[in-house]
Image (cartoon, rainbow, N blue to C red; front, top):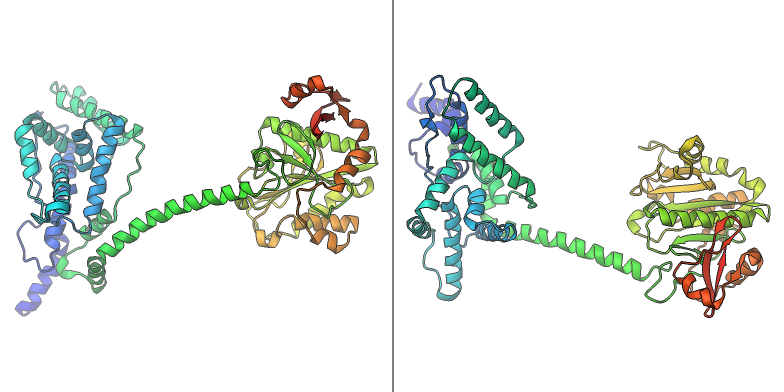
Length: 552
């Protein structure tokens, strides 16, 4: 075997031992110094911690091993003002923000974040140089450590304390966990059982770790590793700079050539996240401003108001209606679905349901209520629609809706096709069956055949389900034999007087409208007066500027 092949064989055989080699080798690509910097910043403190744990309980107790240790840190290899300078300045700024918010000393916070005060003062020195360049121009390329030397001379006690902390704890990326505390506590107990009396150092270390652990629990900041840290971690895992693959060399060249561009992209991504939040807020505000069912300042909604309570009002649907006296039960507040309503709102919703059921019963009709909340992402104002139908047709309604739901959505779905809230109500849940069967975050459809329940469905494929409430209108069109132009067309509210409003009041519920005396109007507006007709709570309504009516 010639000398060339022999040397290649030896380098391949010993490539797994590259991290243990300490001699200086020729640095062809500039990787050796970079990896040494990375190792010096993160590895020594971990090594000290491992050595400490491995020698916690010696056969012959010798507590001198817990004496002070200092870790030598090589000079930084970065250039002041390079591509990573902005990230270092952001980290430095964060140190001062945390110190200001928590009321702690800046040096203590920097010691936890950087792992040593030397790195902190190097960042300060870089900041001073960057500020100086804005006025006088550059004076040096790299950090010299002069600021840290001044600190050592002026504060020798703080320097000693920082050295002890560095030997006790790992670098800034390490976090004290409950497992680490339990292990150290167990080692202290074992030392006591073995008769070791001088364990004050261990107890002091345990107390320091507990204090840092308590601080970590109260800390609200989420630390996300920067791209520089991730890149260093990847580079430190390279086996040998001399044996890099073509892909690794190509990636490195790409990072070097596009460092500034990549850093700008990261900053732009953060700005994009903020823009998403702003645009989302603006979209929500635009929906609220144009909602036809919301009260805009002092003006009423565009939809007609038949009767209004403290939290809910009764309205009419946009034309054409599915049946005579078709009505809407609408929350006054903008709700995406009725599951967001509180208990008081639900009590009023049920009161309106009872009134409409009693009104339809006098005409030998039943009322089918339904809510279509299949598109919560659109944030539209929800409403429960009340459709009176003849009693013989209402008895067949459950079969119509079951068949339509089973054939409307995905064949293979994650949720049950039919959620039988009526059966759950009869089993003991009562009026809470609907609210306990579906979560408010889910896109759903629900139809009530009785006041306590009916059947529900989780909408998984909105495109297949259909836009708006076209699905429900098709089912009613099948049951009531309606013309296609009625259920396919959906008009808009104009904000003007609707002739259906007068017909609804004069024909449907004339016997349930009562005029309140003028001396009680102010109390009625405040919700104090609750005139009761029959067995239902009264609901007030302003039918004219000079009067208030209550009906049940």
